[in-house]
Length: 132
Image (cartoon, rainbow, N blue to C red):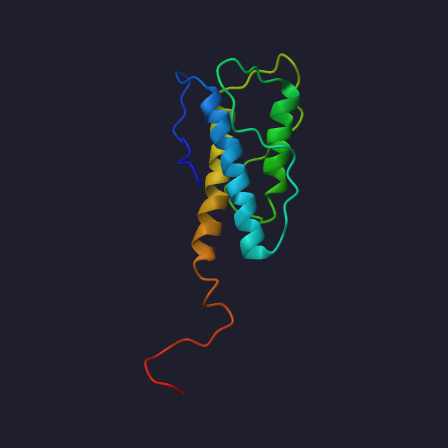
């Protein structure tokens, strides 16, 4: 189930376990839409959606999250921001990174979900009221 992304991050906001859980959940949702709409199976690395406040994220986990987002980029869409897959210990994750992750997912989900409703019509002749 798609979880509404937070797209209005500011410097004053704190990034929590729930936020990264939402990003990973939505990554899985977009991958499922890609498979349903385009027939492309996206081979994601492990998805974690059960983080809590006792969980500590490391650079390798952030790299995995970003690599998974990179795998979703099967469409060349305007507005997608470059991903960072070279996180290292000590790198600072800030509100701009949070916006980038959630915005990319939001763009992909928006396009895919709008197109998925038209699958039934693709390849069919469906117009007018009379039988031809």
